[in-house]
Length: 400
Image 1 (spheres, helix red, strand yellow):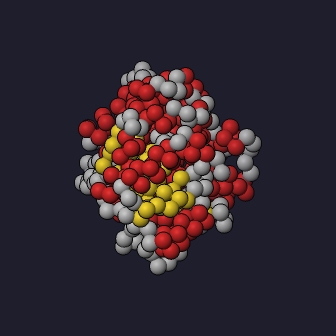
Image 2 (cartoon, rainbow, N blue to C red; image 1 turned 60 degrees about the horizontal axis):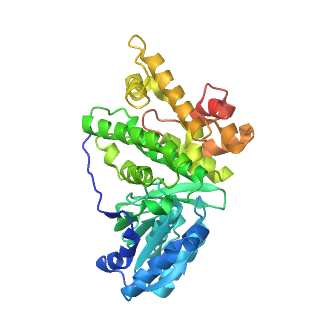
């Protein structure tokens, strides 16, 4: 077991009508002049944006609105937000939406006091020394960004999608009312459930697997999401099941399920470049990649994959063959993904065969021009990802 530091300072307000507390929470954490950042249609149509603005007004807090966030949030809007914050002397940001809105808000928070261009941070060429505090009103359980230190942004120039992680970006508060997830489309709901599970699985599949408490917590979160995802797809206004998924999303990405483990993250790193190039939904991209990643890396810790198959996927343990048990677990996960409408390879994801040149471009971006590896269970090189190298490789499976 590895030594670890667990830091989760976000105050959570969970339940019905919790959005009414937004103004008081901003005031509690020192906000006097707020940028309210959001996407568009749903938070406006539902009246949630008006509720947040009214809550701020009741506390005599000045605010400026900035909408327009899209899935795979763009650095161009981040730069616009930074300029607004500097011009208006913004001292607090409230993100109203899902992971894309929260990530965009964190990027604005990081870039406002930073003297260079914000994309420098996402290229991992520099670090911030301070950030504008961020609060969250969550509407899409998926990314877990409401309690995490991470932000992922897409640069339209080159189709690059990169992350930046810093504890200074952990939100001061997160408001979560499951009622505001009732109107989510089925696709977003399924993508969200997949993302929640993958945040746990990225930490679970590790060469460090002897932290029993962490293992059991991770397995429980995975089973809860698998139980309740089909329910909310069939019954969108099932408050109980929506609440389970919403809270699981936060616990899956506030580092609780990684205590004592180094984790992997190759699936996420590959998917970031996949969605940067093809502008696909993040959760769907993860589902398309994971089965092939699992088959390519399982030999590194076959007992871990066998445990996952039995404890999470409910597979019968083939005691004489951990390989058979592990493979049965991967097939069971593919069956689950398919049952909730997720793809299990890139062809299903993008609707066509991708070219060798596209795979090589994705592999090059993922490994920063072949200067770095990705993953922790096995450190994958560009050659592991690149079909053009004519080896038995990861993407050779998932593209077809």
